Image 1 (cartoon, rainbow, N blue to C red):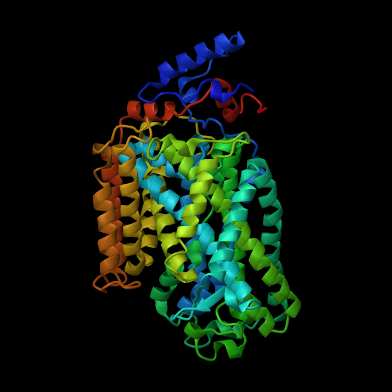
Image 2: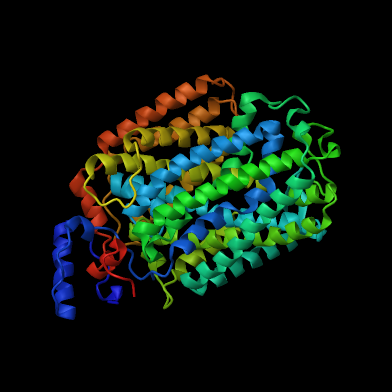
Length: 590
């Protein structure tokens, strides 16, 4: 295979046609043979240089499925039941449908643009550098925060056997002890980084083995506990099926760990730059992993509620209790119903499931940094890869960032609320970019085409905004601070000229972003969820968010980049013709 380094990174501000000619000329001079005719649309597909295409369909699917089945299953059943009672089952169904719609949008974009850190790069193509930098930072932020929360879950379950790992917070949750808990957390994160340094192929094999276990243990718990301790009367006890009403159902969806648990379908897309056949495999991996995760989580919640003993429910849904407190709810349930051997398996899984997810997200964070650097938003040093094709500088930054997330001593619940909001905010960029690609780039190849795209896309944007709103003001204002920090970092990159590829600032195409971000903050502030002032009552909030979402969506479509400019941005990240053909499936990978 021709080395990508022989051609370097193609300069921005060139048209797709001129780049095509230059690549053709360079290839002819190098290998001395004719190149079959290929359309300029195909040649301008963005391909990442330096990364190795070693990951197949199973590796991609397991990257997403392994990310979905993490600490969310270990704690999601408890937290969602505490927020919604037995109606938490409805919360999981709502969350699954919402994220499935967003997954369909990402599946089409992922097939069109198979890149490392792809979710952070779609808005760049549609709305230019300012929007791209914004959504790229949202993507990086959520990815960087996941590995620490997975490590926190490991510490939580481990506390049942090693009491000094965590301590109980004033709210009844747990935080790491200092220095013992923090040092172990740092050691676990360092192991994640070390495995990533072995290369993406080794990472895919490691994650594949872990994912088989991660899928098998929840299924085992469903079968064993569901078959032996299923008490249907629990679904109407202590206040009826929905003791906290419809409001509780939606509160559980965003802040009760439901959305957090189901997050991760996009991980296959983050490895798009290392996929052996991304045009075929990315859509299949995204949609397939989402279906698997949704089925498992819904069944887990049904079994968890049905198996709760009377002793755990005697103080009501909001105060579900086990002998081990909130540290290990599923293991506590297995112990309470007398299945000790399953509790032992669950304690082992509490190391493997969160550990596997943390492993993938450390890698994903590094590839997000790589993608941001390719777009010119952060220093170019983050693009450095070693001989295995691993973005080593970005991995180091991911490790340091993960350690920083432990500093405020957050609980698992606090962390997942922030991650959920940041992730859904990242997801919100995909429907906006999708609308532009359908209207202005209808001729671009699409391995997967979402049915009803022009209708589903604004609905997906509305869904994303609802999920942000449900997370509440207490979470949204913290997310706002993190967003400001990101703008400071990106601004410093421009002022200090740390990346020669830094693009011109496309202010016009991003004029809607300040209104969107501030508007979502104001809505959460006036809402009825987690710290909101309560001036936007339930029911009316849907109408207001719907009108706001449609206004932002069509405003963004109206001022999006012209087709030629988008083509230039996409072509600026194209690589060699041979690599393009491998992605298109017209030439086998080496």
